[in-house]
Amino acid sequence: MGDNKAARPGKHCPPDVSKTQIHTSFPLSRAVLPRLGVSSGWIWTRECQKEIEREKKEYYKKQSSLQKDLEAKYRDIITENRRTVAHLELELEKEHNRTLSYREALVSQSRKLVEERRILEQEWEKLEREKQVLLHSGAAGNLYQSCLAKEEEWQKRANILLKEFEEGLKERQDIYCSLVVPRIQRLEIEKNLLVKAATDPVAIALHMESGLKDIFKHDNYCGNVLNRNKSQNGKLMWLYLKYWELSIELQKFKRAEKAMLGKR
Image (tube, rainbow, N blue to C red; front, side, top):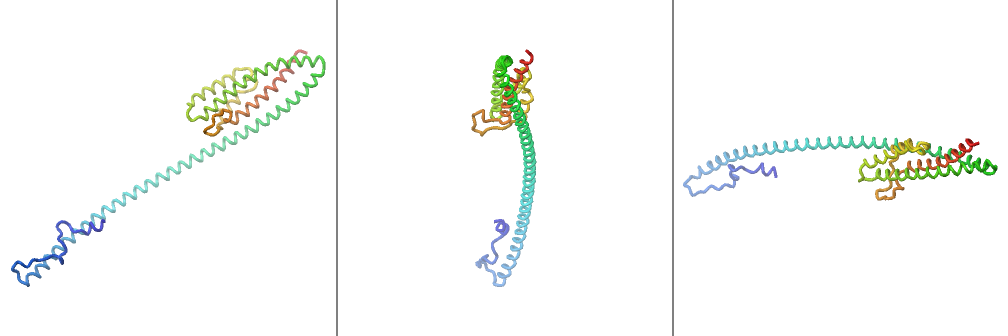
């Protein structure tokens, strides 16, 4: 299209001289006609050629300018895309490192809790054997039974408290996994749980405050997006709840033993 435009004669450029018709109605001699045709045709052709060259130069100038603009825009787009890709790769690497760090911390904490649970179970078995001996030793057995009955009341209160912490943690984890509930509600629940753990005598005896802080820092496990069962959220919190449950059982026997020895 551009070449046709450039080659098109201007408004001052006549049609092809070879196709120009010279009317012979004028009384011109045969000798004048060829000279007139050749002379005028040469002048017109020269003017047309100049105008064509001007149009070509203008066209190539515009084309060159447009090409430079497109190349500049292309370079800018490439540079911006590379910058974006580099930023995303950096963020992905950071997230990957954070995930690995959390996973290592969770595995380490889980192993620690499993080991502590094993120790608790061994101590519980030992106390259970001692309890059976005392139950068959007359007066001492009766005293132990009395002390144990009192501590079972303490165990009930401790389990009620533990259930309250379980409900609070389930609610906290549900908010953590929610896409719509404001974060401030989760922080309020966390604050209330920490206050209770730092002031309630049973929670203090079980060292629940440090465990809660560990849960709030590391437990970010959520069920699937459509999950509405709060019990399917969280992992570390459930390990701690089982650990505290065993600790309550163990504390009951230790408190009974201490009470019995104090009455002897």
